[in-house]
Image (cartoon, rainbow, N blue to C red; front, side):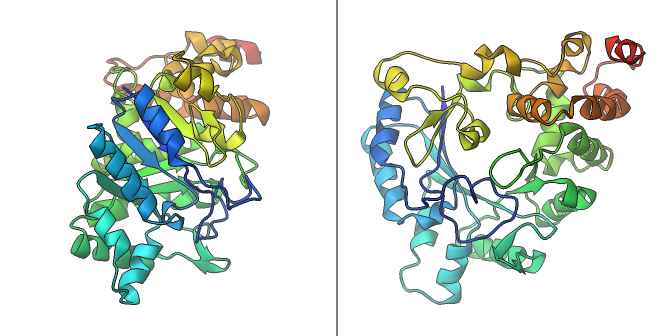
Length: 356
């Protein structure tokens, strides 16, 4: 059982300051050929979800997705298509009363599910200097409800500049009756410094205590990680590269979207898809297994070391101790949320011994 992330294009009609796609490639004209997707599906016919990212997926001709749907149905593949888009083209075809309504028709297809993105702050911009505001987002959400039949859930990218009001995104999700997913910013593309997970985990704890977990995806993952290790997903699934792949517009092939942005830990597409081999490059990389040796004896191991891209980033930026000290301050809350019983004293472990 696999999921496949595809990036049909790196082109986008927004100008977000934080986006990893903004400066990854100079040539925005590259397009992912569907032939590669079709080969992948032949190799992994039980693929559950095709996750479409970008750039923005609507920068491709809408026919691209109809051709994909036709292929799925002709071969009786079960995969659904999950499109993450800013929905701006959908908005414009109604605002400008375009007769075709091409994106609306696609979004209504039973195989297609649409998610979007929004966060408070100045990072998400329609064009340089024109911030995508709450009013813009709600108008589009209302239009999706009216014309497609549901409000889309949304992803919020959290960096230090908007960390202080990250929880406001969850309050907005509750107000709209949808789910949001607070994702920490990686060190890719324009983002030259990662956000250590410890900062956003403080927000997850706050979300839990405020009773908002029903509207924030990663908080629920945190609440299950130490007691139901097989049910969690990104950013806490240490065996993620057993069940997901990424295809870039240039045809490069990876097991993680973030590492794909880095062009790191590439998989040989020909060997795996055409040669019937199978690779787990992230699990096989010892340097990505843990932040430091002391982690292996800590009850928070699965939380702090759940994302191998995070391990790489904060090792690279020498932020391991900063992250670790912050996590110590909230570890008891996380352990209690995970129903671990009596609180565990962690202030006397090898980490603190090493500081003496």
